[in-house]
Length: 199
Length: 199
Image (cartoon, rainbow over all chains, first blue to last red; front, top):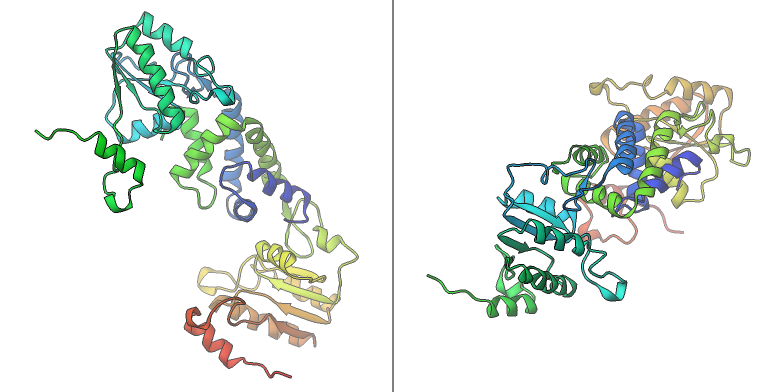
């Protein structure tokens, strides 16, 4: 740590970024000061604006600075497909990797009663109203394949079942390019159990 | 990249940090927005202050928001020892690793005539005046062991020689904990050539 007060404060503040330890923070601070003060100033301006203005989309709970996020506000997106994910990163990942043109609902978490996260915290009442008022033809559940993600998925399946909506779950198994030898046992067991008929 | 304008701007701005690519920037932006808005706001405030206020120490050219850095301003630091380094990171590294209690001079670069970096750009006129007015007993040259660093070191040796100052250079060789087998050839050759008598 530097003995200059403002410089140490900068290094300390940079550590609020995930994955940034003391050495990396020091390198970042000196890089900005020595080579890119303009970039630092711009980052500061965007940061404060983003922290203050970015909120939640009223309809899907994704991050946006507007009332509706750009996906919900886009009339070109298919209203009959609804994909439920745990977090905004999942929306970004699906948008980048797939050709999905439907809409999303972001839970901002997963059912975890021990941590005090129940259906209300995940906005499931809001989702229930949406399924009631404007039911999609298909609801794709894309929660993570963890214990809590599976519990959440099960809860969502029952909710959608009440409204007679077709429910699908993204498939799980051996990743493409992976090798059976290095796949963990539970993934391999799941892949084996959920084998599909080849036409 | 997100389709939300402010969020994409934040992700883009975070990429001014060294070693931060698109995926890391995305993770950082979402982490701040979802879990640590306060940290983000504080980082923004410190960033703008640091970029605007941190300048150079008048005496040693190190980074500081004051006229003199805390080392130059500290009367307890030994005036008879002067360590010359290339960059502020080197000052931090030496302060953290050694018990050196003398003063520094920061070149902010190294001699590199092809890139237009000559003695004037490195503040060597300022250093010459300091050696004239207030000569230390020993000048420790801690430039990096690269071609340019060695050239700079040679130039500094001649400067100090004119004022009859004892010049030392930090030692180079096999790093502690390293193994000869994995040490690069030029380091090993240097270590062999500069072997020292064991008492």
